[in-house]
Amino acid sequence: MTGMPSGSADWPGPVFLAIGNSVDPAMRPDYEVWHGGEHVPERLTMPGFLAAKRYAGGRGASARYLTLYDLGSAEALETPEYLDLLANPTPETRRMRPAMGAFSRSVYRETGRAGRGLGRYLAGVTWQGAGEEAVPPPSLVDLIGRSGVLSVRTGVALAARPHPAFPTMQDASAAQGIALLSGSDREALPALLRGALASRIPSPAGLTAFIYELIAAY
Image (cartoon, helix red, strand yellow):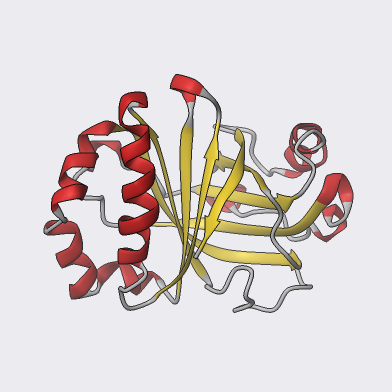
């Protein structure tokens, strides 16, 4: 895919870290203050962490969060500074970790991007595959402008060190692909996910679709 240069302001890194989680509803107000005001800004002080975006999806007890970090390279997750941060969390981080459930953490190497701009909504699919089946389709440029889509991004998962606080909840990343669509029309995106996008996935195994709303960009 072409159309958005690597290193653009929209998605500045060639590698991105995707973290998903739910939150105990009783702790959600504290979580929002901590995650948006302490946790994400703290991560962005680490070498190789370039930008972050916070998303939320669902309602009530089913609400779920997604955080995307743009990285200069996968080595950003192996620096002494970052590993020390994981091993020695702040007091508020220690308090919030037990309130987080359904934790997932995957690192992706970007394989393509097109379009420009970030919309209010992020829609996407992930899938499992063997070998080439995990590699995203080579071109999604024609999706730009459909259903309010402004930009698209694809990636393939990289092997990554498990998070020390959630070692048994790490996503298997050996053969996983991802395609992300940033757009403005929440009502039209589900049909696009089920149709034009899902039909191009090389392997339907483990196909998961999602839509999140942007909370904040850093």
